[in-house]
Amino acid sequence: MANLIDELKNAIVELEADKVVSSVKAGLDEGLNPLSLVKSLQAGMVEIGDRFAKGEYYLSELIMSGEIMKNAMALIEPKLAGLDQEHKGSIVIGTVQGDIHDLGKNIVVMLLKGAGYNVVDLGVDVPAEKFIEATKEHKAPLVAMSVLLTGCQDPMKDTIKAIRDAGLNDVKVLIGGNYVDEKVKEYCGADYFGTSADEGVKVANQIFA
Image 1: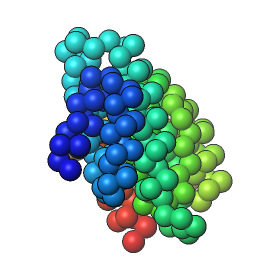
Image 2: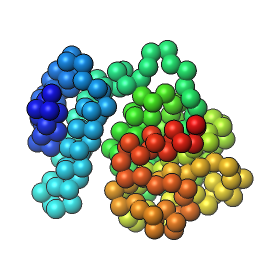
Image 3: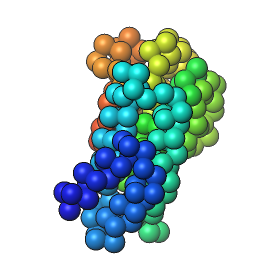
Image 4: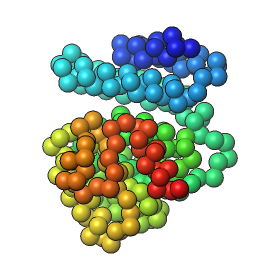
């Protein structure tokens, strides 16, 4: 079992699309916890991000890894989601304006859906108005914002201010990204921060408890 988990991580790091799919299928056939497969893929994506930061991988590899991840998650998602499950509530999520990265966001979306939430995914490069409209429309008590680019910290801050200015003071805001920490959370005016997909689910469970 551990071998299969390691194989899966290595396969996505090496961008071996077919091997990723076959490993996921094998893991699901063996009855492995789908979440353990997601964590393995996520660990692989972290390593890919590190290689990209070091200049060992380029944008083309980053895009390719995203496609491989998407295909793998398409196999896993049905196993994460409970059949005919009543959702616990609505969560609005999107990548902040100016940022087009969606790898981390997509993992969080999958996990939240698997945990029984109705997830309203606004996509990437999302302006403040779109977050506000969706939050009001779906009466969502939680808004999650994903960010990868450090230059998008101010747009994130502005978006959170706009949400507050729109009178949505009871709505909790969760921000997530590889460089997000307590300081960034305080600077942007968010309520919670997370650096892994699991933390997003923990925050949601806390808010909806």
